[in-house]
Image (cartoon, rainbow, N blue to C red; front, top):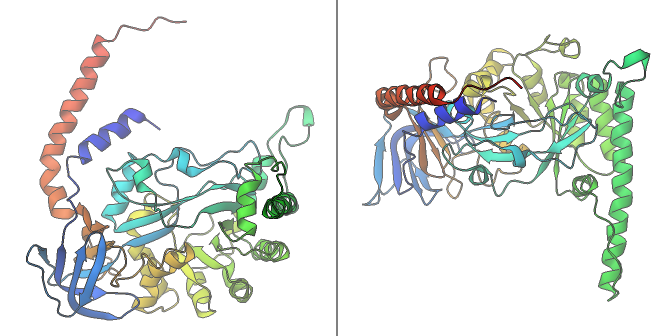
Length: 445
């Protein structure tokens, strides 16, 4: 990543201040609650929370009032699969990299954060990459542009970890080796990917048993030596205990079934199957396992294992009782997830509420944060997106975005600040140019 360009972008956009939280009332909007119906009314926000929602509410004397006549208010969009704000996402040297964490490489200056907010996104699941059969630990963040990396972390979100099946983890192992030697890293086949996952959880079970035995001895008043800590196995032990969610990259139906069976053998559950382009073939089995499915609306044929996809995938899985979300896996697509959700109406005939659920309450449930976000209800976090037209319209534009009751995007303020930002950009570029001129020329080594 070009740090100078990132810093320049941050300096320019930080010219638009985040407005401090205070009582805010949005009036006369068409409110798409997702879980409690749609009606014209008002929402009161205070101290980062939704305090009241209704057709008529009492406006506090000190409240900032926003007239949203003719506009549509929906919960902030939640992206269940993103790599935005991550400086790196793959540790390709090993096939089990559960000891690494995305939290350690979050970059709060990534311009993709601001662009996502401008598209109505307020929360995202930042995943490790897919080079590993068992990848690194994930981070759920709120898109608090202008805050530090630590302040972006969604504090109440359950921790997660990334798994991957198929071409991505096996091709990383099948690196060309000199003189016809064997691949540089195992696995190099789909069978090997399964073996790596099975072996890792066999080790994790032993590790778990050691700690349980240690805890039992301590409970008896004994003073045994604790087991040696293993940072690779600790996250997998948390999976076995139900304390860490598994988000698994996958495509093919046979591999989806394989992973569900391995998980059931080791007595844990897959929380979400990511991409899951052949999920429509095994929707019954996914539903019976209790896994969610976070998929693309209409991406396919970009590699061999994605050829048997269909844009009807999301709707078919919804009709089969699977908890489905639409994700981005792309900084560009992340800016218009509302229209990605709308495609499920063309391909599958989902209702407005069903389509919007794919980017709000459903991903919130998949991340176990639905008590906090995902719908417009009193007591939930004040994460909201205001559109000038119905969010499922191709012509809809985001007007304002609130995170914890603070305005993080305001289209009018953004437009008004553009001349100032251009002047700031020009000044910074001139300063960089002068610094390069004044720097002594480097001598060849």
